[in-house]
Length: 138
Image (cartoon, helix red, strand yellow):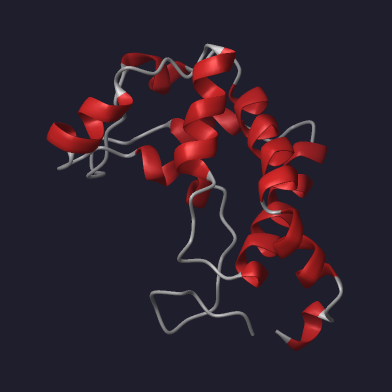
């Protein structure tokens, strides 16, 4: 069983692993200031955000990355998947986004699709390595 890198339980390849890095709650001064210059609705800004933050998951193994990409792929293939729900923050959560645009992205599916495409490039070696293994043994 693939374990969560921080907890002694199984790994849940939830798509929030990709966007949780943009949560600036209690980090407004540093991370919030860095991220507020980017508009996630602009393609060039979105690409920078994904390359520099969403895919910078060095604390995850190649197996975790593979599991995340497979989960993302499955979600992208589901025409009814509500990608906007990933960006919704309830009143009882200790979370916040760096800019107002994050709360209602113009196209949250496109944002996650771009993560998928860029991960195929930047994580190519990790994904290839994991694909050659028997995932049932993890």
